[in-house]
Image (cartoon, rainbow, N blue to C red; front, side, top):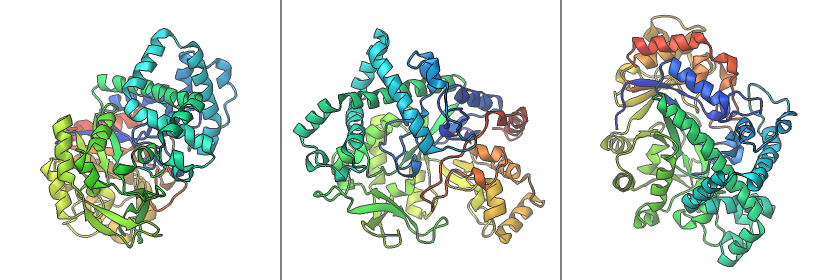
Length: 498
């Protein structure tokens, strides 16, 4: 569905300032929302909120629905009486500009366990009832997730396919025994999800009252080492004996990698999904829409045709395109949930059938200015070639920052084309020149990474797709949200009718 002409900022909540080493849902989140309001923005775009696993990536998670417990605010736990002031006195000297994930996990998880124990011992009757209602209402995914996480910790094996066969294959007696033996650990993970959602929905309520909407993100695939795959093996193409994938996901060689990207996620058994009315997908989308207002479907093209690579390959080069029942899926979701506010991530190796499916449902596509200046005047990412029903970005979380792109990635031809298009020569203001191009385009929505608002270089990049480690860690400092940026953004909102 098309959206009104407007603008917003791309920023994941882990990037908020915080003395606790990682952004959370406390006061700095509310300061950022106030920054959006005062600068005239209408959207806040985030990455998936799920608990990250391999490489700290929110796109490789232990659950497609659960929230990241590291986003829980220690300050809010203190306000609720679940922590004492002395619990927050000796905070490690965490870096200010990036996340030390190992250090944060080592310090914060014991703190969250203390809060969980306090909740179990002295939560008010009202909060106990709220918790019980949450557990009952979310039981469809929460029971499996909490048990899965407890088993991950107790088994000494980091991957569920290495567990004893009775747990790997979910024998009922073994699961019942595990639930009894691990009831305290299971309670802990349920508490984390309860507290995360309490804090997130409070923030979302504040945001929505200020006429700002949240653009969330649904990764098309889920991690193999996840509660989803363990609890629903029939949904995926797995070896029935070992639980390992028979085929894995990725993309062929593209702009980001000469050998393609081998993600390793298991491929869906689309025949099973279609025969069951896409129930797993419908439940997933419904849950995500309780947390955000709009969803961006990452790797949208995989719902029309997906790149399938035989398990065991070391690169994504030896794969093949396989048709997916995208029309049947979206028709079913629309029938069960109504017309959906979806943005299609239609980047990469896209063919006409993918565009046809996108346009059939009037989903806005994505346009990236960093891609606009290679080629000639027919480049589809140039602002004058962009469709109105699009979301235009300077870059996304997978791109360099605009300053980083200009100095480290753009070749002389691209720079020359950019100079011609701007009618000037690039300099330190290139990030704001790109922001102006995005705002002035005909695209209904313009979304700008906060790093570009600050004109930051490559060291502020969020993710490099070809690198497995060292991503997702950028953070900004609270003092960076200055009146100057508020005024510059608001002026552009007014000038370009956003």
